[in-house]
Length: 171
Image 1 (cartoon, rainbow, N blue to C red):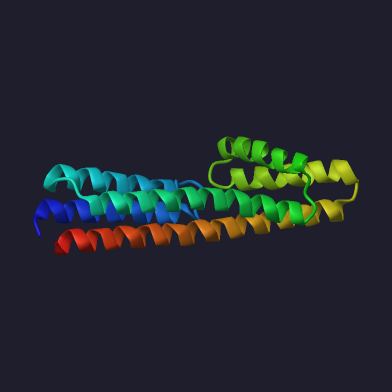
Image 2: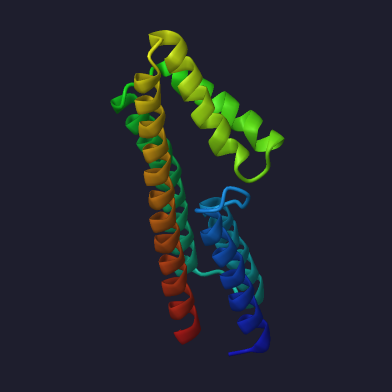
């Protein structure tokens, strides 16, 4: 194995590990960074040693996992919110205040803003703080499950990339 190839592999792995950390840390990008690292790896290896259909297949599969991960994250978080009593207005307020919170209080602001959005809307709608708290807690559980799903999808993406590297190195 050439030193350049080894450098590409370790650089990609480092970038993917940062992406995996980003699935649980709100300040870092998550599976999107893992996908970007896989794309960079593909481009670098294709420039260095030529085009590979195996690499294209692996990159398509990693892209599929990215799309599934993003859709699953949205679906899990919103389903948990709705199942515990959050209205569609609360879900929208959660998204809006989560985005605002991300800029106002870095790292934890997105989560605080999202939870505040659900609580305020549900309290305004029902005038019962226990029901508003129940919807907020359900939303928090949904976000927790979504983070877990992102982590698992990230691990799967890294596993596919590892298989890709293994085949490329041994052939």
